[in-house]
Amino acid sequence: MPRTIWSGAISFGLVTVPIHVVGATEDHSIYFHRVHLEDMARVRTRKVCELEDREVSSEEIGKGYQLTKDLVVPVSDKELRDLPLPTAKAIEVVAFMPWESIDPLRIADGYYLAPDGQVAGKPYKLLRQALERSSRVAVVRYAERLGLLRVRGEAIVLHAMRWPDEIRDPSELLPPPVDLSDEEIDGALALMDTMTRDDLDAPEFRDTYTEAVAKVIEAKREHRELPAAPEPAEGAGELVDLMAALQESVSKAKASRGEVGRHADVHEVPKKSAQRKTRANKATAKKTARKPRKSA
Image (cartoon, rainbow, N blue to C red; front, side, top):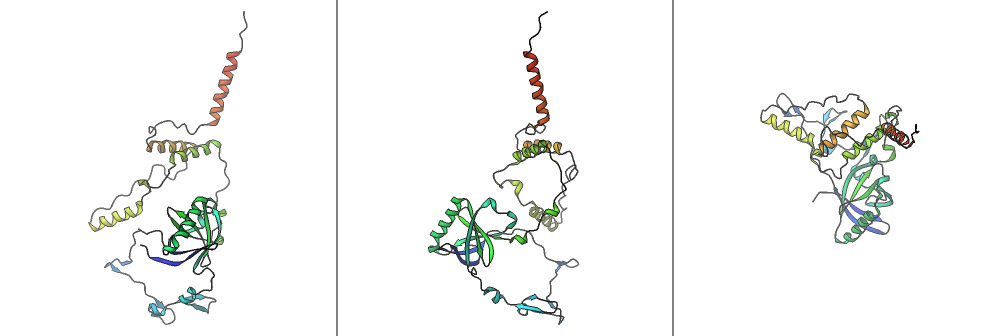
């Protein structure tokens, strides 16, 4: 059972659901120590008081907010725990929204909500099924933060949410105005069709970075040659003809899924101008065929 991070209750109108908040994710990344390369001894960070120029213990360290250049206001952990907040120990449902209307950039870490005791089982299931059948998420406030509740399997997940002013405006990052043809858009849609998946359980979605780091560590431990880095794909990073790149991408994607031969023609990216020309030629041919010939 994961460790409880926070305990409280979901307030859903007059319905109260006692819950425990537990972590929903695990970090399997590989971490490194800082070491002295000459003798491989650990390098430690010492906490030194700038004024007294001496190392201080953890018991002497607290939080402080720098109000001005010369004034720091101390704030204790107890004072932060006892903030006069109406939602300090409650997750208050304030609205329901369609999941699609939530900007993913505003969604932060996720936590599982576990019912606290047998009495919480029925209201917990009631809220979970109501969210599931309505295809909505619940926007909530907790500890004066904004969050949302959604369904994952048989569990309710709480996501922390960022405030609107925490999302940067991307306008200055956008490319200059460009024109796209219908053929280029159709090509991109055809590529998307060949790459569409129903899940993320395939081998290509595994954590290859952690695997590569583990192989380097194992090779160094056994004094073997390090694994060679793969050669970059030919032409990677170069600007190429967009339509040609899309058609080749569709062909490779279909070949990788065994749908067509590697050099098969791509029919999902029709060139409309060519289609129109073909139709015009056929129409002309029909008119010519119907025209009666004069007798001699």
